[in-house]
Image 1 (cartoon, protein in one colour):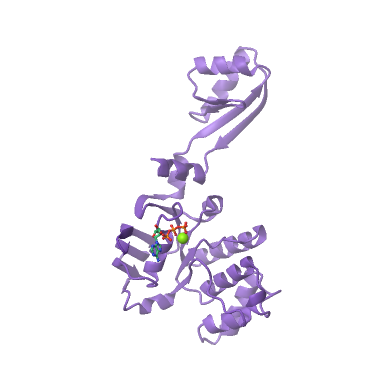
Image 2: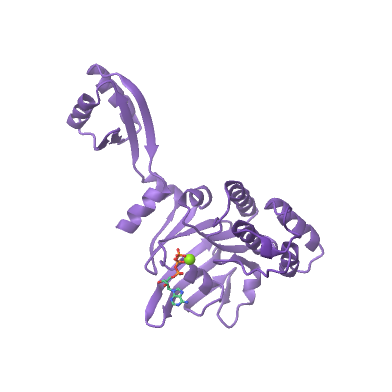
Length: 297
Ligand SMILES: Nc1ncnc2c1ncn2[C@@H]1O[C@H](COP(=O)(O)OP(=O)(O)OP(=O)(O)O)[C@@H](O)[C@H]1O
Ligand SMILES: [Mg+2]
């Protein structure tokens, strides 16, 4: 028995003649946060809707070892989700939404109270949802996805419309649930945020998986750069070029750093040519740079 909470195999979807998904296969291991990345229209939401039986697609879905099909998906009771926009009734309060969504267990009231505190909803939870802002609705939708402590949580662009404080609250809550064993599949265009959360990544392009990797290995293969400001940048340029460093730009002077040791070598080289270094900065490619490179390929 493997350790995957979600296994998706050969997922294929046509909308009329248009193929939206082509043979999508991936797994989410228990307790992992998996990021689903891709351009607008790549197929992220379609994958999530297929897993959740919101649309009918071909392929095999297995959740916690049980097969889930469009017509037989009892196992989805163990899944929490927020896809695109939360379905919210304008004349009900946020608390009423949570009451409807929360399973009838004896700690129901406590669980509702906990999620209100964790996502900081208390100021508006008892007001009618018709007066909520975009971010308030989004937070309520996330609260509804998490309140039952599901073993698998699927969130489509969860950071949409959230302010920096709410984004941080959500990140901390996701990491806390992950530490307790919850598995997450999260799509996001906010790659800087995903970089702080996801350990596994699936990159989708035109309905196909183009890369499955871990965040660590993706970032490890990234370029590292050095920018320099000196008392004589043109001369520094010539010296570094002669020493075969790859120069990315001249203003500011930016080079690719082949290894950590090369900082020392560069400093020695410049000092021996009487160059004074005024400022020196290390810059690393981030997730956004890596993803752009993958998609460009
Ligand atoms: N109900 C639908 N009818 C027809 N085509 C659809 C439908 N839903 C999605 N598509 C098409 O399927 C493809 C994938 O769409 P999807 O919404 O999954 O993309 P996405 O990766 O979620 O994009 P975004 O980042 O913009 O949310 C797109 O080409 C889209 O036009
Ligand atoms: Mg989408």
